[in-house]
Length: 101
Image 1 (tube, rainbow, N blue to C red):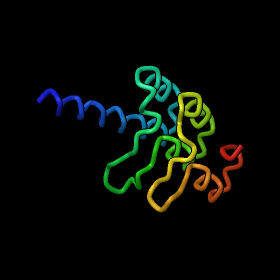
Image 2 (spheres, rainbow, N blue to C red):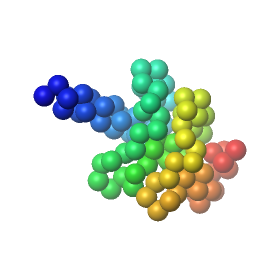
Image 3 (tube, one colour):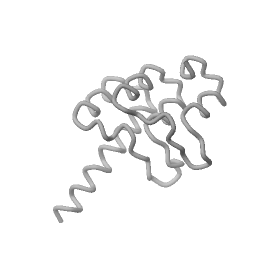
């Protein structure tokens, strides 16, 4: 049960990070990263979420402030989601110039 609880806590933290990135909650993203910087690169494995990292989530919504914070904490700009899309591909396809810089 201890192992399952640890995995559940990790997934819960990952879900909260992805949700905060998608919704633009910079303060919440910062709080999560300060407790666990590894979450900056965890994939969203919930059904229908395309294997995005937090950078993908932030790029989809043009949250350039969150993108910058994730990069400071080691977010991988080369991470590929389903379909081989990087966060840069997503930002460029949506013409989010702030995020591309």
